[in-house]
Length: 116
Image 1: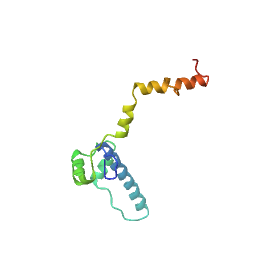
Image 2: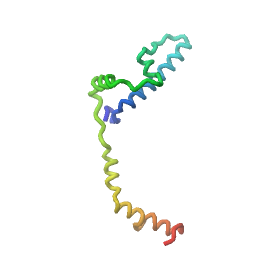
Image 3: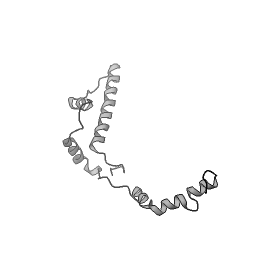
Image 4: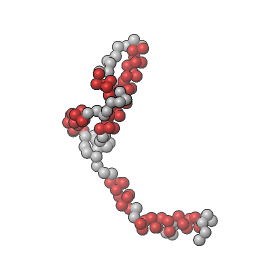
């Protein structure tokens, strides 16, 4: 988990997020230039990331990023709530759901939808 309890992103997710930020910055720059306000243009590497045929950001970038912000990043952990929920969904639980005292079959019979 990350610093705020959010899962750590994979490289492809980081690339998509960086592209979204750069696109927003490019639109903002165009908007400000129309008003005559000076802006800081995107550099060549930032423009390259925005190209549709460009690949994900390099592994080197990811390694540098993770090294710089390691104190705020943790590895992803399995969600224990999901693991507990899946562990409970065994055959007896399913049988009780369909055929138990308050199961689906009895409800359908009581509603007249299904024959006994």
